[in-house]
Image (cartoon, rainbow, N blue to C red; front, side):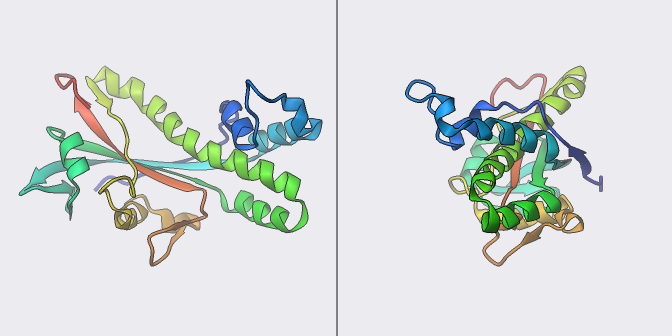
Length: 207
């Protein structure tokens, strides 16, 4: 069974506009200066100082008796069955902030709310951007062998139940990196995301 690929990345090339949007900036109705000059300095500092750990691993996929099967993991989801029809391989994706950055956020929530708000926005957008980063990183090598990733889906969307998050937690090896999961299948640090993407062969044109 292949081990997941795990990398620690800074992603200081992430787009800034989604962070500004989280902070309340609206391009047509608000000047960024209204947020205060300190915000831009803090934003850049946090983007360049924080890190994200990314995870990905390829698994076999099949549909058997209307059940979806990733490797030996069986589950029901009409959404996955329909979107992943004809697919033989899938990619499990994950990204999480590092423990030190999350602990810094918790400290700032008690001592400096202005910084905490900016750091929270940066971390939230950075983990989302990390999934895009993984897809771009894989795109070139996959294209060479006539494959591509389709649109990713996350647990909790439609009938792809949140309970399947535990499979991602185990398969991606999250426990080794201070990531936990509770009885409601919520990951901690809360700035942790997962997704499942179909791998299409060259002859496939649908998603």
